[in-house]
Length: 475
Image (cartoon, rainbow, N blue to C red; front, side):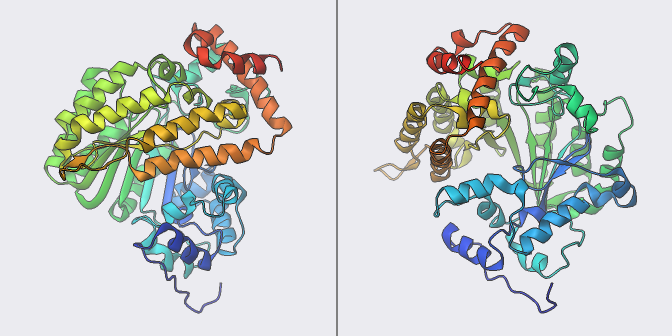
């Protein structure tokens, strides 16, 4: 890199479009998340910067020399180098697909680079060597795969329940042998048991004192974090050593036993009450309503999930709640009833939050497994997504004529669903043989799912019978 200092002229208050132009002046493929954001799966030693790229293995040889290899692997440094050269890393295809679908589309490359945990560091990043070790400002960690759910698009790497099923039955008989353990064994991805020594967890606690003071965002994921002792160890560490600039975030399916949730509420109340961090966020997940949600997220109790969200709204009013809704083909037919449930929470509890929204909705689209992504649907099924966009658009937040707050959906939530519609439409305009393979796999998957788990797809998703039969005809 030229030793002459480079200046990034971006402004965090710029519009998305302006910021995109400013970022592209650095490099049309540059994304600050590759440096400042990291997710680490300690149960099997995986890392990725930004949640879209597929995680890659952390070499133990690198880790033994440097605990920060949890973030700064040699592979990741090569991806950073490509970005600085204006080349597109293949692992970042999520954003390239969004950007190529519409010249005006704003991808997560832009959104993440403009965040307060990324934008202030861009000048420093572009003026340092590409192979420099970096301390993240956004760290997400999974301590283990212990989980009480078996979500249809999850895997044994991230769910102990899935691991048990795959041990018993093997992989699903799809073209990819979905969730077979042989692939994990071959690539050294089998999760380390919570009973065994874990060199990645050991490295984390060595790196943690150095990383913690530099963090503005720290997020615990899983597995189910509330079922892992390291989560509560982090809570206790924060109670001893405050970080007033930190946003602490926890993922949870909110379907744990009452006494476990009670312990978490007790710790979070104390952390918030004593001002140990800037704020606390809790991320939970659902992408459909009622029995359809429970089919997707096997083991979920949808009513318990809703009740626990309402409990958190009442008992920990300072807590910010976010629903991660990984939109997929099984979301299509019950998404409006799901949106109605979230709208009711926004309206019922908004006043408790000094007129900020009680709950946020984040809607990424599912990429893997391909047999459950929206890219396999028939064009006529786009009507479902279009009607969901209309529903959100007709229930937007704003101000009533009397000047009081009108609780509803945000423009960001609306744009997320519009983006899914645009990306899906673009994909369906260019059909490929791979789409038919994925459709065939869809029918194979739900048949095997029903056999193993005692579920009944057509009873749960009667609106998808025509689609299912068309997929079945391909088998």
